[in-house]
Length: 208
Image (cartoon, rainbow, N blue to C red):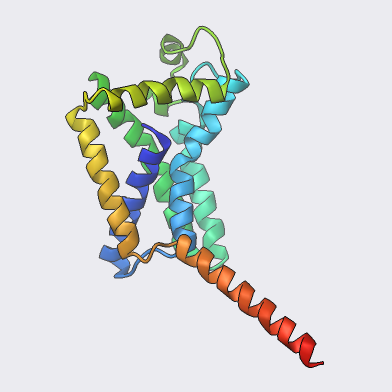
């Protein structure tokens, strides 16, 4: 599953949870946490495998439940101690949702439930079956997969699964706008406050 697909799934799941449980939209920090955490396993494992060759495949410690669960608990506890419980919850949900999403994506694409991607370091024999023969670097490897994905889109050979992903992306966009465009809204408000403060300081200095 592509990083933006993980981000879409994570945001939709957390936003719907917020509306159902809190009767509220996600805040900017929560939206950032859910999106960042939903792609973090790939940000950890892909460079370590494709660039630094520490792992043989891009599913290792970052995707392991033995790392993901303690990390989510630790971040949640830290966020709660700082009065940011919902941001910690968003992080945990985004990170943990990434793992089954990869398993489900693999099943829908090739019909195999590859639970080995969640069990590092226990399933190294399965990982070796998917190991790449050569390393071409994380950027080059990304573009290899991206252009393969782009060719599928341009060829018009869209599977029902891919159409579902497009539909989910549309829903995520509408939901984000309904939520008030968190992160973008917060950034614009921060810029507005900065400009107002700068104007106030400039006005005050002239008055002196």
